[in-house]
Image (tube, rainbow, N blue to C red):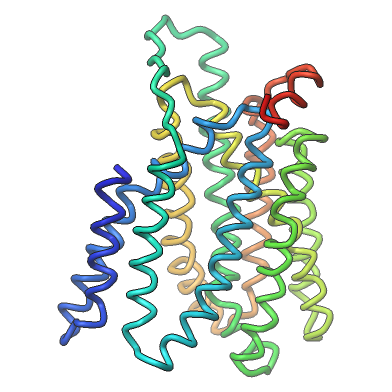
Length: 327
């Protein structure tokens, strides 16, 4: 999947600057995104395939940190390159994709000894695990519903409700992203101590402690400080949700369960802006934004009460230390 998807995505990304009409631009972007969808889930699924269960939250924290760092570098370097030539950022992205493919293919060895588990008569334990999976996926959908509404509409909320410029709103929201990036790796260590489920519940409660006051607060500095706290709590949630999903996956189905994770999170990203846009039209204002976001996290909290599986498997301390040291 990676060997097919990455080169295709790189080719069509590099073709974007050559588009001479809206139709060609749309075609190149759509094919590029389709090509990226070919390899996204299989690439992410490599992490649990090559990482022991107790270390997956920490590993996911590193992955998210590196992704956030790459985004910061890409925006900064891309902006500089754009000033030289508008096509250079796209060429840079294509070259980096191919370089990443070479590094991955050279240094990462995909496990070949995984056997698909034989179908057995579904026991009571299997039913419970499937129930946990369903409610975990619903929780993911609901908290991404709340998060994506804030991410999408906060600039307009700042402009129309807080009375600040859109550029200032973006800077205020950036504090949330920076805090998430800074706490991505520590969030994995917190889960190693508390457990993934408890860490996620702590994150949801923290997010509500942040979002509920934002329904009423109109001071920009206070909002920035609360959003910084929100980024920390969002890291506790986001870093540990994917490892719970793959922990429930039978052997050989990590990629499929990764697809479930991205289906529910991506569906929320599609549905939420439309749904809140409809609510905004009914209300005639962006004021309900944080009420809507808070409701999403409340529903996620309720769903998490039914998740009983997917936490880190217990290993003795000596074995964990051996894994971490690479022995």
